[in-house]
Image (cartoon, rainbow, N blue to C red):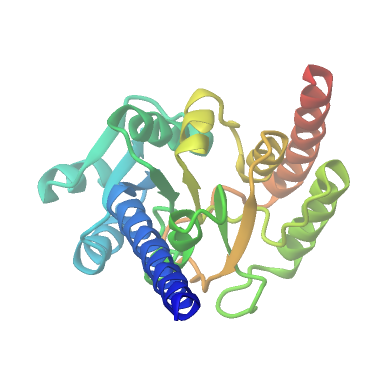
Length: 268
């Protein structure tokens, strides 16, 4: 009889332990979700035709996320629209370029104490309906950086054939330099955790920064994953990479990737 009572007690104790473990997991998950203070960084240069539609979409459909527009010395009505509509924005007195604008957003995120920062372009090409999908791996602790990729499911706007060739070349170069395979290395739709908010606030590449930022992340031992997103074609305005600039872009980014990798090798 005593053996039976002992067995019952052991099963009861085991059941209580399982319940406690489950409660701890649920509590930890809920605590993490509550603490994930998230900021959307929107670099904008001459985006007067796009900024209202983008920001209103965020405010309407993702009210739990904060946002900050970085007006990068625009000479059009971007600044006046932000003022008139009461948007949250930082007005840079001169044009710093995409790297400087994004780094300004990271510095703001670091100073205010955000846990997650998400970059999206001010031209509206990045569909905000994918925000939760891009942020989720950070909330679950599965990644340090999440990149929204056009090339996983290959839906939506895929860019021109010439640009796809360039993206594939840079993807191969990054793989050769770091051993990390990323399909959409030029995607500006990406989210980072607190660790990389601090890293990028301190140092972020200047011109055409996305591929170089990936190399820097790998060298800092960051876990990077891609999730499928659908991007839109730019409706108004012009891209910062046009005609002869495409050749300059490829040369500059190729050299920047190599120098970044070599510099980390020397430091280590």
